[in-house]
Length: 454
Image 1 (tube, helix red, strand yellow):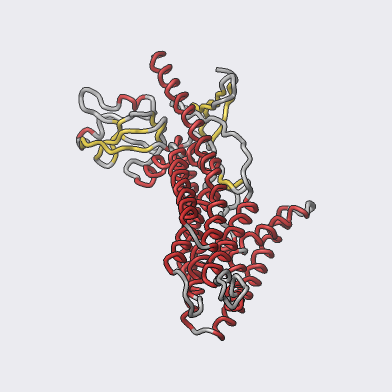
Image 2 (cartoon, rainbow, N blue to C red):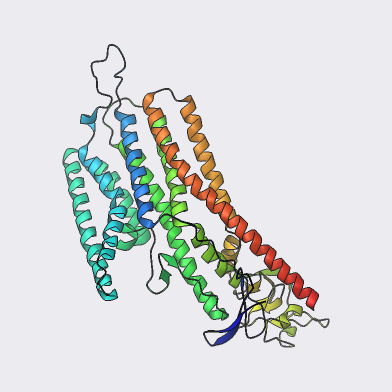
């Protein structure tokens, strides 16, 4: 091994070691338990939040336009037709279109306004914070005023029920997110001091308490992002695919095709939001944290209560053989970094450590789910890539069998847009699979070398 340097983490001194190729990093805590190795994640170009919101806005706007075309198209090609227009534009409610466009563009416009502070280079951090607050509250007030005006105009022409169907998702938003304006205006929610460039930060600490606190922050961030993805996809599909059908005037249209198009829009928005909300670099942060966390699997054998005080170990290295011939067990301690395959007793039950190291709480299902979900994020991207491939192939199949021009137009646009999402998910899968396969090989080699040295 090459260069070594002492590091300090919350009072616990550790050893930072890099290999000669600088390709992996390993931490050793004060007790001698080797901490996980991390392979530096490649810095491949990814789209910014502004570009993501622009793509989502354009997709939803054009998808809503295609749905209006499906509803109000004419048979202009028929020889005896009395119209030369392809779409009965005069039947479309203009304030409904304005409501949909305003609501779907809110995040893109807000990101554009936030980026305006970058032009003001002389602003201090305090002034930038004040600028963001002014933009947030003034823009949200202006947006809600415009939306309220559109709802009022629709109410004058329609009745109470259509208006209720129009604002119903916003009521659901209040029940899920409360009065958080930031969640309404942005896809990702940031907490000051724990985020950098829109991403939560990971610290390779050797302190079990610090690691568990970091897991709480990352778990909350993941849950917020997941709720945003589900709600955003449903909201976009509702306003782009369902609302135009609910406000359609009394005329004939293909109901099955219209709601099939709404379902396709929802699947497209769901995979697109997942690709935007869970980029490969974000999942790598959660993966690194999961390797430091580990998890405990409950053993079938029950611990004997009388043996709880016979022996205990104060470090992870001695816990590797935690069950002796006399039947004594090692008592779990919260401030200890436990090595793999360690067996401890906690609350009258035996637990076995899984992962390179384990600082998780025994019997904590949240810690177990976090480790199992993010120990290999390549599986997540494999599932997303498979779903997106099915969406693209389904769109191509529908285009092949479609006959009417408006069906071909709407599905061609949606399928073409989905290919961009398919490229992103496939790229993330290939990159993460290569990285974590190499990381696993390095971990196995390190473990084998340690066994041979002993």
